[in-house]
Image (tube, rainbow over all chains, first blue to last red; front, side):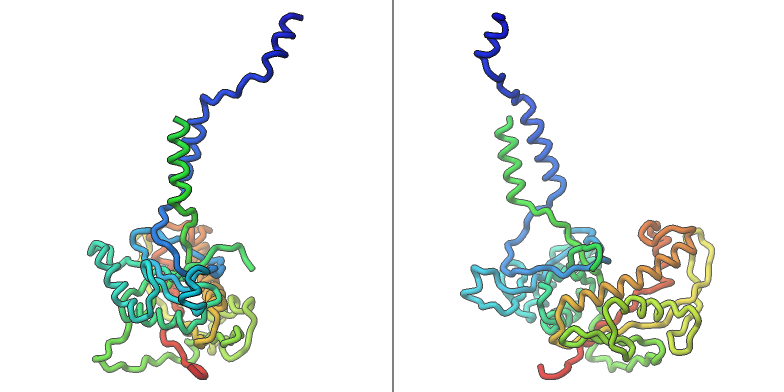
Length: 156
Length: 184
């Protein structure tokens, strides 16, 4: 009886936290492996179109991004809602693509230059006019490998 | 210990993104040299499948208005030309080196799918059409790969085997020159 009484006074024993670091480290390593560094701030909003036959972009270092879409909400007061092209960290026009591609190409080693891929991240509501202009500029800049970014679905 | 781990965890949560970039990969044709006079490349009518996407998203392939769901089969029929129809692309018998060093003849279709849009066409429709065309090519490649490489799908092939299939079924989608339809 005395034993029972003693237990009742003590209440629940505290949960051991000795394994907490291990658990957290495990989650940490999961995130370190499965994520990539966020490299640039987006100034445009886009919802990628969906496709079933997508291919993964193999080497991240060989890929340069061109974002096309409406300015983000905070930028709309200044820039309106017409679709914009974002290169690096600012709004640009199609005329700047030549320089952009040249700059990106300079960053790569000579061996990799032929492998350079441009990833076009455009909103699904964009008109083809602007996309075509960008494509023509890319041809002019001789950056011929293009990936039309789209999210994978199982079908529609 | 746990605090440090938490700190690192939160840093990684904030500084990284999860998504893997996927997309439809295409190779654009090089810009023609303005100094060199261009000769018009004559493509026989039977070797060309014109896919046109209008401003309001209607799709026309080979002179007929069709639904997006019919497009894949239409494209496949065009690429394969199983019965050697006179109105579908010609084939050229091409010797392709197999991974084991031997040579094997493949009938390679001369067909080109030309994809045209207006400036008003939505990007989404365009991607859907590109996707259907890619799917047509992928299915044709899968079929060929299954018959040549003992039931293996195209995705499961080794690099060299894949090269054989890719040269036997080249991805010929021409999307070069935009068409200025209507007012600009």
